Image 1 (cartoon, rainbow, N blue to C red):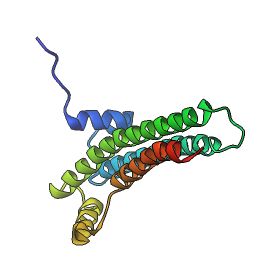
Image 2: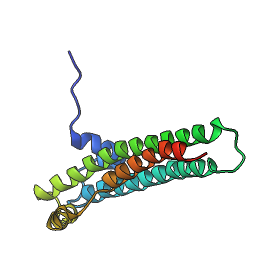
Image 3: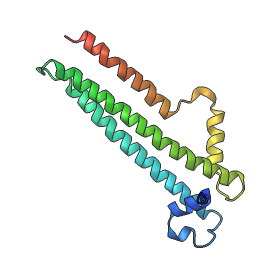
Image 4: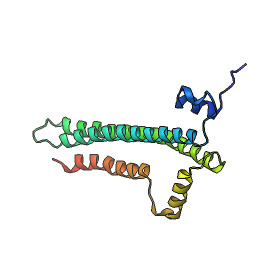
Length: 159
């Protein structure tokens, strides 16, 4: 016999703290707490990503120092590249969780459980912009492809 799986509401209330499950929260309180959790998570996502990208670019820059022994520049560039892709995968992992929280906020808005409509308005504005918008995930992926192409190109062109 498998244990009963807790509902999404119970899981979210567990994340939001001990007082969130004690009694029914005021109408907008649950929404605002989830929004605060999502904002904190987004900040952590960008802080982690920025840190690893910075390390990657610093190592890549180091590889251009004059006088390095021959295998070191290529090795440093490959390490920098692997750190970049690690950061990108970490960003995508964090982004999935952020999307889950934003989706839950949107569901709260659609079902009328809150008077706040931030996610609904954001979705409407972004859809009105049409296909002209490109997500940060796509931009980081495109840049990663260019970054990846630069390593063999530099290996081929650099003496």
